[in-house]
Image: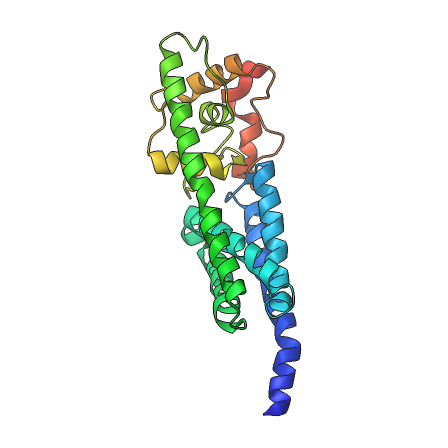
Amino acid sequence: MHNFKFLYAKWFPWLAAGINVLLLALIVLRNVLFQGFCVPVLWCRIVFYVCGLNILLTPFLFRSRGAVVNAIFGGLSLVALIYYTLFMQAMGFICSALLVVELCYLLFVACPGRTTHRVALASMLFFALVPSVFFALSYRDASHELQAARENGYKGLKDSYMVERIVGMHFLYHTRFCLYDGWRPPLHDPAMVIGLHLNGMDPLHDLTLEERVQLYASLYPDRPLVYCRACSRESRGNRYFTDSLFRQED
């Protein structure tokens, strides 16, 4: 029994880390080859890199001197995985759900009963959700700004990060996962997605896609209408570059 516990303690972190590498690799590979999460915007990529690194290191850190720091980033990682699971629905459920279960076990159950550890984890889980409120409020304000400016032909429109995201919906930024669409807009911005779903409305919903592209071109003449990467490497994703929707850019 003593030998078993010794072997378990010695090899469990490496086994768990190996499983995490496999699950993360499957998530990334599925996204590269097929239309899924597509291309996260810069700040989202940074968050995912940090969370991915934390997930890989958690089997080694959850009982170490760095357990509190690991718990802090563990809370952020759990929120990121839950978001990915909700967005991808059935297509992303298995891998991300397994990672959520493992992190919950290591951080809540298997870790030593340290009050500071659990307080750090619970605090980060809470504070990682706070930006959702900010995203929702920013989206609401941008929607009101667009609706007000629309009456004057968008003259005097107060530009903002979220205004640009809303105008670029459906051809630059995608809003939801769908198995049966054609090419998908390549960029994924959780701030816009969360804001849209919490507010439940697109202020420019009555515009056709062509009108939306024209509006974006008029408001942001120095920005490209076509992103440099498609949503995936499959043929459906690569049709994005040849769509007649963007011929006005030539």
